[in-house]
Image (cartoon, rainbow, N blue to C red; front, side):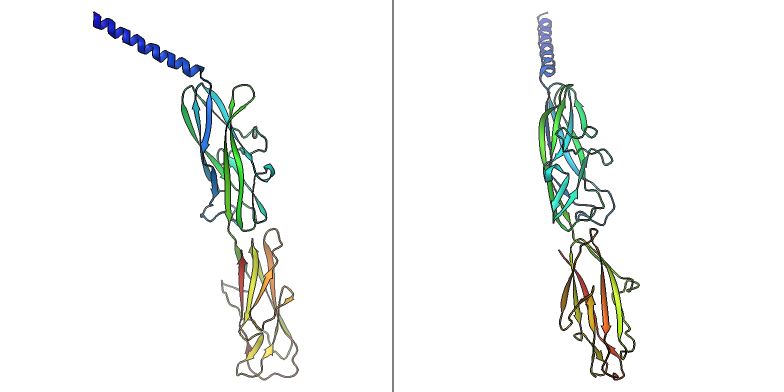
Length: 309
């Protein structure tokens, strides 16, 4: 009998302790904390950064977690830009790159200059009483179709965690996040005068006893300054095949004369907002003083387009 009574007494003590613990969890206030990555870097589909020519929507994942202790409560998360006057932009290379942050790839934006964030885009959740953690993945995106100069871009935003209890939301935790993106310089050059992917072309100037003018057009796309190196193998002269006197010719790039006595470098003004520009190379042979010796006259002109990043 004594053993039975002693066992019952111990059982009563354990039950009393469990009841006290449950009551403590109910009366403790809700405590929330937001933790996670403090940097998000835009790598892009191929790991080279933001591609100004791509039209694909891409995302970088930003992992965060909400930690909870105490009574049951509801919460929501919002994002506010800290740099660039509260605008959701990354700044660099004299340009601005817009960005966004979402709770799902197709969900509404979490970003707003307002302290409480966008009403339609708040990321909401809730906890039961007790300790727990909810891991979350946020999706940082730089929308496609932004043609900006090559360089490094950066900005900062803050994630805010609010408790929602029926009254005014209460700010409980903040997580500053730095956002960075590299934009590689690009240079694309094409010409309808070069067919089949060829990098060489022969220009027939006809009978050099008569004045001649020929032009070649290039379409250029670049998000940085572009230079053109021009080198004449014969120093701006059409050389006679048997060593006779040569015939000087003139070269213009977009209307500006280019001296060919030695290697020349000309810079193109990339003023168009979409980075496009036409480069027109004009070759002209002036009138000669008299009949030229019969034969073939030629020169090799090499043009090299350079992205000056």
